[in-house]
Structures are given as structure tokens and as C-alpha cells.
Length: 249
Image 1: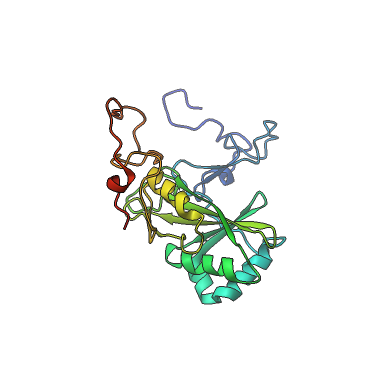
Image 2 (image 1 turned 90 degrees about the horizontal axis):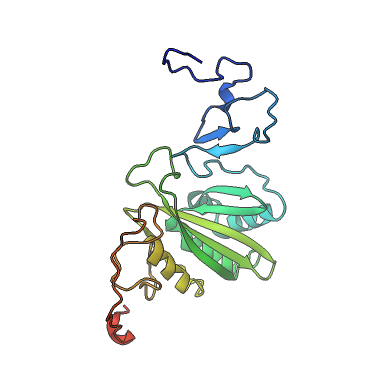
């Protein structure tokens, strides 16, 4: 280390520092920026996402293993290779689960095939949830980046299998097609994702708030939502009848 106020990084001159530990593609390997030096910390194999780095940038290579390849082949056959290539942006297999990252304009085509095809039969959408990757969804935080993710958990009761679909949109254009026409169980799940994250599910039969008051300003689970300091009034509050406080269109 330099003792004259210089910017020499500690350890870079020492044996064991390797450029392979430096950030690459949004990821950093190891905990201390060194390799090959007999790391006894237990963190030598750690792979961390750099601040501002992408969330799971990579796509898992085939074969995926187990029944994941069977489901993927059946989905390709059901929708066609061209549609699959346009719809599925990447596939991630991790911790015994498979996630298909889907372009929103092809979402309904995929979920219909997943529900109806005899080789797939994902009859149940058990969950629809939202995630905001404000600081970890890409190499730079900029307007138009798809930081809002909608996650769908699909279950095949016929084959006893579960998969996950994930759709990413920007905060400036947070529109995703509603899957309620395919999976009615998604109704209130989509309402909650709208209420908390501001994702607009186009085609939903009654997309109104479900947890917050109808006139609430903002979406509480977005990462840029203020923590505290929100004016709330309950004293002498009046709740109008349901048929007058909302307009279902």
C-alpha cells in the first residue's frame, strides 16, 4: 500500500490477486478480491452481484436436467420454435427450480399453451407477485430500464410439477397483459401487484386497489417509495358504500 496518499489498492501487488476476481458482467467472485492464495474464509466461491449489476444476467445452458427439458420441449412444440424464441428471453435453473423470462407481448400465448397442452397441463396459477429491482436490474440505473418484474408460479396438478414465469417492464411503461382470462385465481393477486408496485394489468376485469385506500398516492413496495413521512388521516374518516366508491369497467 502506498503511504503517501496514493490510490494503490491493498493486496494487488501480493501473490494471489487475479483479474478474474474483478467485476465482470455485473458479478464479482470471492469476498476479498483475491484467488489462489489459500482462502480459508469459506467465501472463495462466492459470486456476488455488483451494485447496479444485472439480476441473473446469464441463461442456463441445456440440458437443464430432470423434467425441465421435457417441459421445455413440450412448450416449444405447443407454440412453435419461432414463437418460443421470440417469447422466452432466457431460462434460469437454480436451486431445483426453473424460471422462464418472458416478453410481455407473448405472455398470454405461453400461459394458454402451458394450461391446455396435454403434455404440459399447468392448470393452476398459485401466485402472482411483484419485485422492484431499482438498484440491481442492469449496469446503469436509467429511465426505461425494466426494473419492475412480475412473477407467476404455475403448478401442474396432473404431473406434479411447478415452474415460474417472469416478465419485466419499466416504471415508465408498467403494462402487462392480465392472465385472469386463463387463470381466474390471478384476479386478486394482480390487484395486489398493481396496488403495491403500480404494474397495470391490461384486461383485468376490476383493477382497483386491494390493500391501500382508493385515493392513495404512490405504490408502497417500490424501492423509491419514501420510508415514513406519509400523511395519513383516520380520525372521522368515512367509508362510502362499495357500489358508490368504485367504478368497475
